[in-house]
Image (tube, rainbow, N blue to C red; front, side):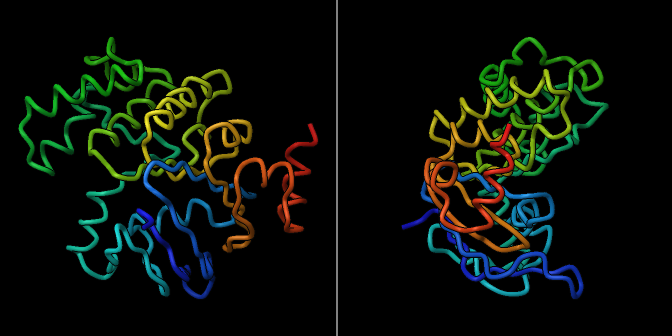
Amino acid sequence: MPLLEISNLSAAYGTYKVLENINLSMERGEVVSLIGSSGSGKSTLLRVLMGLLKPNQGQVTIDSQAVNYGSRASLKGIRDRMAIVFQQYNLFQNMDVLRNVTIAPVEIKKRPKADVEREAKAILDRVGLSAKLKSYPDQLSGGQQQRVAIARALALKPEILLLDEVTAALDPELVNEVLDVVGQLAGEGITMLIVSHEMSFVRKVSSKVVMMDKGQVVEIGTPEQIFENPQEARTKEFVSKILRH
C-alpha cells in the first residue's frame, strides 16, 4: 500500500490550469524527484500537497486516509505528516539556530522543551551544524542557513519531507554541502519528494523520477530509464538538452 497516493489531481490559479490529472504514488522510504522545465508544475504540486493551493479536482491519500483540503482539521493532519523546505530559508532572523529549529515543535505542537532541544541538537549534528547552535542566521552562509531549514523540517518528524529547489538560491560553491545532507537523509531511508534541477544528484539519489510538462506528468521511471532510455518525446527532448554538455 503506498504511503502517498495522488489521483487525478488538478489545480488552477483562477482560470489558468497549473496541474492537470496528476497521478503519482510513493512508497515509504522512496526518494521521488520531479524534473522538467521551469513552469511545468513541479513546485506547484508540492504547494498543493501542503494545502497552500487548494486542488479543484482529485484526491490525495496518506496511508489510505483521504485528505480533505477544505477541512482545517484534515489540513492540520497532513501538515503533521509532511514538512516542506522552500528555496528561500525563511529563518527567524531574531532567533539563534537552536531556537529556529525548536520553536515549532515547542510552540505549535506543545512538546516538552527539553525533549525537543535534545532532539534538535542531534538533528543539527546530523546536518553538520552542531557548532552553530547559538549563531544567528546573518552569521551563517546560505548553505548553512538552508541546512538549518532542513533541520527545522526534520524536527517536526515528518513522514514525508518535501524539498522545493533547496539549492536554487545558493552560490554554486555552496550547493554541494546541502546536496550532501539530502543524500545522507536519503541513505537513512527518509521518504522524500524532491524538486531539483541538479540532474546528476537526482540520478544518484532517486528511486523514481517523474518528468513533468505543462502541469502534467509526462513519464515516470527509474533514473536509468528516464535518463538513458526515455520513452516520451518530451522527456527525450528535455534529457537531450540537459545532458548535451
